[in-house]
Image (tube, rainbow over all chains, first blue to last red; front, side, top):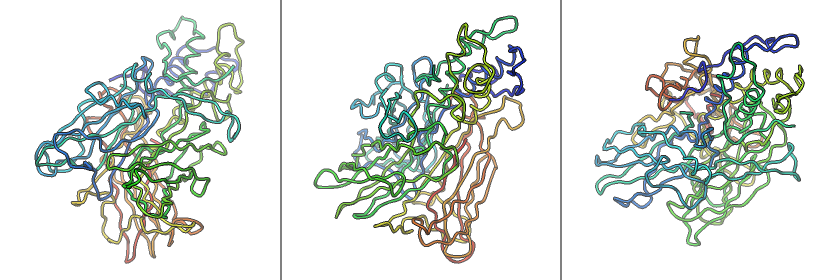
Length: 205
Length: 363
């Protein structure tokens, strides 16, 4: 629930507002530069995961009960970071159901790429949703997930790219919070969890 | 003297810009850096999706997507999650981007939960923001055993700095500083260049990928067939994505909100849709329908027996309106409702419609 910009939208200012013979008007500077830059950043969240399975479902590879098992990781991808050091939030939902009516649980975990420490315990980077429904439907997780500033620091890695376009000899390194979002399942003795789709998109709030 | 791209989105102090007050150079520098952050950090071209396809031994799976890339990108990273079942503990696979390019070799680990994503760098030969097809080949060169591709994604490597002006739209942050001359030009210096970048930034910082699903085009020795493409023979619309039990599966969508509340069209944004298809004769239709009521039908007429080489299926593209994000809510939903994209297809007369890809981008 964060609207950082003054107008929560782009304000068009006349093209000549910053012309050669014009004084810089505070109204135009506030609306056309500051507000627009902030609103653009507020809306810059990327869709990181968006999948529908075609005719099949994800389920536990070995159908254990009462265990929490990672079924699939999506990513890695460079998670955007806010000015307070925490990450953009991920708006997540799962297309899932229980195959026989007993409770099953879907857990989404946001964790550093190849860290060996998936941060899978209850924290700001973890959310769960449970259902007994046998009808496949999109289920919203109760909260967005994100990384705390300390977790962002742990997940930040370098990526190389050419210093000039198409160079094969000169490279530099940029840094990003490189993460995966993984889907975990737990299920009961009489029901198995099924996943037909998953969605995760960045959000400023 | 550069147009730096910060790692973190720092926000300028809006309350410092008021009538009767001087506009501080630090505020303008913060505006420039935030604009650079929005347009220089890159986009997610392909949101991670699951083809969930097991590549047979000695076969290559080719995946194709329709995108509008960001001009600022110099390099992309493809992410691929695989697994296999092998007595040896792992199997090699080879990746080439674009398809047909130089291969690099990776390992798929054995086990149902062995998915261990890899990063595959693709340095671009030229900058471009033109709508185009991007593709990836994944080859199972082993004599036996399958390699299951569980996920594919692709994103731009963030830039450290941007070139001044031109199409990179970088602004030299130092030229906005205290005691610097006030430039009036568009070569990436001063407040007029900042205004130019500001006017372009929202369009440049688009959601490069909204939803993509490519069905593999499978072949060997450069000959790619249609055996793994989605096939449609029904003459009535049928969901492209559905469960084993036949339930329709639809993709959630939320686009960026451009206009302020109350302005015309502020609850909707036009995005792009595309389908890579071919028919054995006649034509086929692929219809996108949003929960908000918007709908568009793409008519596939290309006749092809393969989606690769010189005999390619054809992308058919159009646009559709998608509900915009509402930043006043906890998760961005407008009126607590998701806008879902239902994709259906039909073959207009007898024969087969083959679909190798559906793409939604530019939100």
